[in-house]
Image 1 (tube, rainbow, N blue to C red):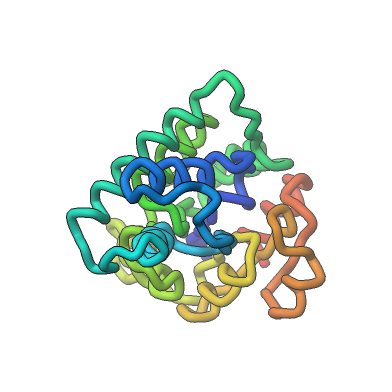
Image 2: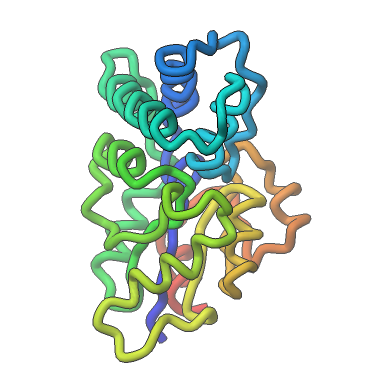
Length: 231
């Protein structure tokens, strides 16, 4: 059975050391006039950029449905994100085993690799390019497709069907992510979730949400490949 493997980005593939949050705050100050200390604490774990953009407008006392202002904020965020990712002081890193795993999966014929992320598409590509991971993925679903992460699974499955005679079945799909929202997202489309405790959520918290499988990280390449393609 072929598999569709849908990877989250932040906390699953990489740790950008807060580049995304900093870019969000930079854009809030530049476009919304909202000083960093005025922004309430943000719960970014598994959130979508679309939902975060809406929250930023609300926190600034602006209309949440102001499309022009939302686009201005989005452009500013993407500019600041790229600047921070390329800055001399950028200290982000790939998480354990990620490149070896992606390379092993790409060389096999058992899986198609896609993305299921809360990042808007352009932001996702900026992060992937920074670590030279953009060539591993065929596409997927992003934070500008839906504000509700639970709606992203079917979008990714549809887009990545390609020339298959039939759409992906839920039992052929595995979501790989580091938050409880990834687990919920997988369940919402009937897929399985491989949860990895490489983000802000502990393994014990992830296991409480009963994912299909939970690992400390992705460092055991052979074991993870077998799990994702044969289990």
